[in-house]
Length: 134
Image (cartoon, rainbow, N blue to C red; front, side, top):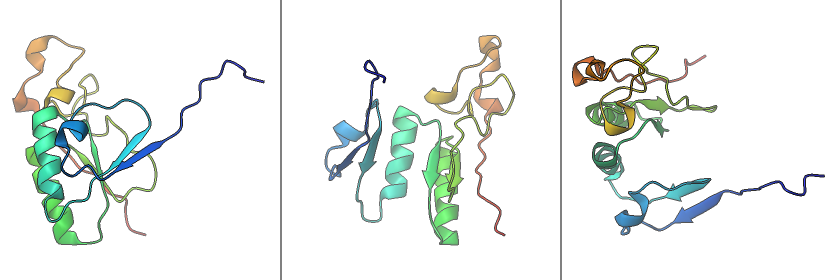
């Protein structure tokens, strides 16, 4: 029925822990990267967000101390985190103002529909979200 339809399937890539040059650049498409680390995942996520920017992160944990560590580290990288969500992650979930894109704290979120002077780190606000427990 749709002979000219373009179809894309998800690609899952595993085993890149020593290949930062691959997973630290922008990749287009339906791509999931599984990067196994030992006690350095949070530091790696922060490093990549600070160096290359990140609009948002998703994190899943049942450990309150780990949750706080992730929140603290990603706040320092000006990257909001959605914790333990089972639905969509909204990319502009923490926009400080209706005409301000993302947090304003890193290169991926420093655009505004107002004049350029409005985009300044003093307006940076990073918030995290987590579902309310029933």
